[in-house]
Length: 205
Image (cartoon, rainbow, N blue to C red; front, side, top):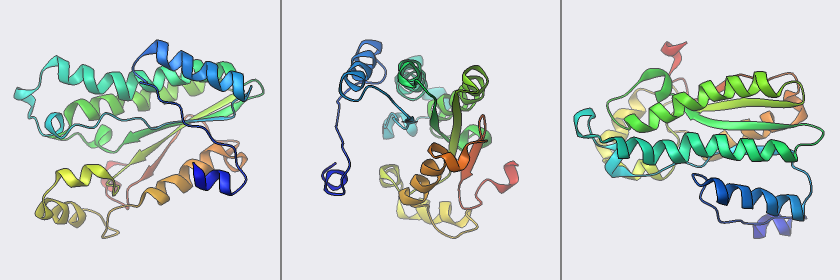
């Protein structure tokens, strides 16, 4: 935030639990009060738990699913629902999903279920909110963020062996695609997903 302000941008941090409707409503009321209008939303909040991620199908409980779905899928819905009310002349929404929603996996099952819902929600929102608001998703492969710490060195090397680009993705590479989808450069794109995975899911197409 300090870097944004240093470069002449206004910025604010609001603490809110996106799985709680009252807190999401309050967050967007603050935006309405301080800024009046909203041009873009990036739904990137995700539930992080190595314990749930590593549970096999027979070990999972419905509470595990609820924990993840409430943040990833419900949070995407709630932030979009209250956010569009502030997009007077239009705007762009970018939802964050995962290639595991397309491939399936034996790990992170509640996560991939939630991300599958986000892809479906993206399509429905795009149809419902057009032509005023565009809605797209980025579908991420193996990006070098905190979840990599849940893996052993051998697991990381095995993962990279499946990626044609030969490395994990960088958060900055995702950010550039998100900025494109938020900008007028993508003014005729809605209801679609951009896969950012270094070719990992090429066989999924």
